[in-house]
Image (cartoon, rainbow, N blue to C red):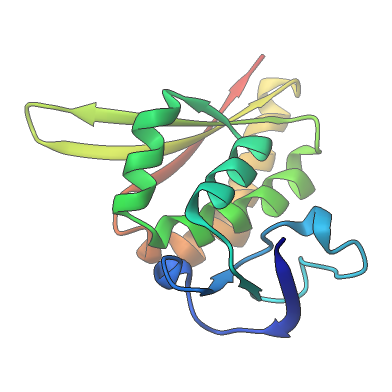
Length: 157
């Protein structure tokens, strides 16, 4: 059983292998009285890394789940960003927008980059406007934290 405390924690998810784990907005469904959007992060005790991945899978469609899981275990600093992105995307695109994680690999260059693909029913001009708002209001603030390993794009359905 996951025990959560709603006290602010200014760490990052990089220590998620330890018993005391910082997770931005993690398991919001277990904290119905806690407005997870207002706090930078919460302390969650005894959360296993597979539980974190399962939580992400509830909010994102994983293209090639095994590969993405390994990538996230190798780059745990991305998990806080992915968790934070859920609320940011939902607030601009609505909860009906499909969020997809896809890992792009350039084997010639030896480079991997994880993409958040937002699939929306908005017409292209409106989707572009909302996407630009997401970039300006949030992603530009976290882009340095991604270390060039996470990008975001949108597609209309």
